[in-house]
Image (cartoon, rainbow, N blue to C red; front, side, top):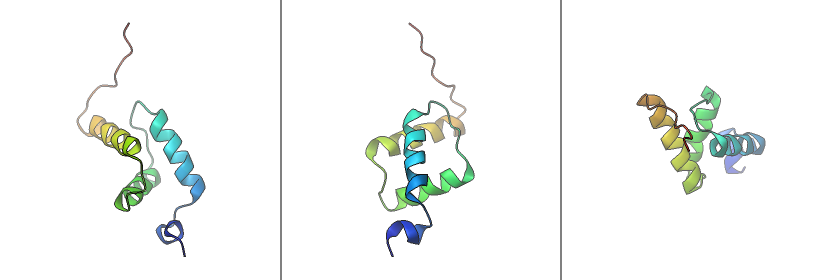
Length: 72
């Protein structure tokens, strides 16, 4: 049995989550996506950039930090 089967996560779910993490500027994750982030983090299966993005988005939500705007 591989680690994904043991964690009850499909490769498709991981691919979708990775895309969503790298494309997000505002926290918008389902309970299942949070569970997947937690499980992948527990086994160091996220890249440094994915982990940084997840932490920033969660801190933004928990700390009521406004979404950054693009001002030129």
